[in-house]
Length: 428
Image (cartoon, rainbow, N blue to C red; front, top):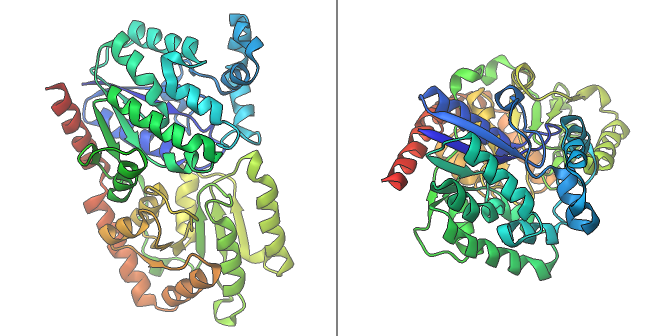
């Protein structure tokens, strides 16, 4: 089967779970003998640029933004667009403040969902024409519902079914100005008429999107995310130092400060003198001030020698991170649709401690490799860490259970086969 994935890139400046999800499926589908082409949008992808070296970045973040805000740029010459969409410029844009900020992009989000009627209709036509001329897909898969505005022209021009994943769209839409939220959710509802299937990454998020998008029951399929256990190095908790870890974009929404405050509180007890906090996942320009404040707190409490910030989080660096920690927590304030870091941690033998929010209870229940707590406060997180760290038998049990549970329930090859089954049913 020939498959096209259309994926918004993060520029590689932070740990992007959605980008990682698409990359895992890309590898698994290819391993099963399918032809898969990744089409990047806005910014370069999380990693593996060698897979897309000859494919242009459509809807380049800089030119798309300028054309939306300043109509004069809509008449800019082609060479100007090519300069703005060059990979060096894209890398610079990815590191700047606001590159992933939803607030202030309400008009652009509406325009993108309007598709062929929006301000980006020229970019849309460029994309569908390139795909029609260079690819012969059997099916096209959109990375998230904010791209639903592409679907009508893709089906008209390329003539194949379109599938759309659902993951964390609410994180983008619900922080926008109230006047725009209802309009955007209604537009997304309308645009679902142009796709052949919607696929959520958890039962929790399937239900969330049925409600947010006012969809009828049965409209959304659930297919959990997956990892290949052979891509990770399993090491049981008993063979690791008693350190706690954080792996995600280091920002307020993801609760990085909750982890820091919980760690400071944990270190008040001499029983945890040996415990360090190891963090990784990167951050954007928007997060820079916030991250510096958290580092200052750690230093002010005399814990600089008990804190490590690892700048790299890809390839070998992620294995080094998991080898250093016995627990991982990413206390996302509003919960999350899934959380790739959960199964990456557990398949590496690292139990997770998460708030009882979003899909976290669902994933931990299916894997058996973690614990949940509530409310999502530093005090409760510290208490749960203390409970697990001081019980070596429980820690080891969670470590082994998480590894087995991830292999059994979140195997990427099994999940990819389910995706192919869905594609085949649509094509029939």
